[in-house]
Image (cartoon, rainbow, N blue to C red; front, top):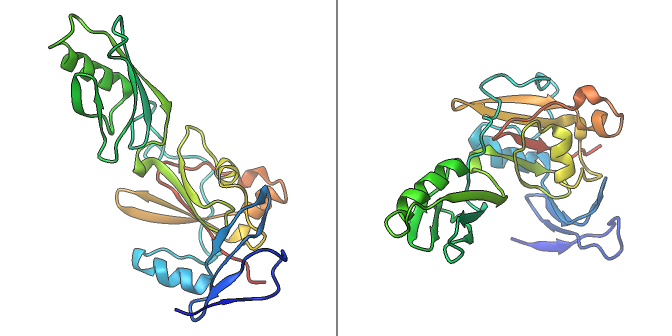
Length: 244
């Protein structure tokens, strides 16, 4: 695939490359919260990539606006469930040699002193503590274990994914009461190429996808707090590029 350097960037020293024929460009754009390198994916190419998943990468003003409240099925459970990448502090009372800090492996397992390959993914910290007590009881008299989540990422299906014209497209751990403004701030804001009012929020429930329009420009630039709708675990926020 041919790569060429293009002229006319917003910064004299900013790299700007294009994949001819696909229209993908990599540059350092301006964002509401600073500068960060992002990948700009034009609407036509993004639509080709996402078509297989039934998603639309372009603005669609015919979509209903995202609901102002979450239904019971979309609301997150009160208890936190451990996910791969979380950092756990395992405290064993009166046994400092067994107390340790571990990161959950991609397969959802951890290994601690005297207990290898303990399945923790999708469980609460309390449930993991009780399981570790049962495993350690073979070696320690009446063990008392506390499990504390020190650095959390959460399960993959509970993360909020941001793609398109965000300064830092990424997967963001869901927090109770999170809104689209929280998501945009965590993603570093929008680039100057973003079509904020053309953004789409894709929500999956029971294997069924529903797309909603979200008005990010009205929220961020116009201060319309009615556009600050809540997000749910597993939501996907698509921010298209504005060509005009």
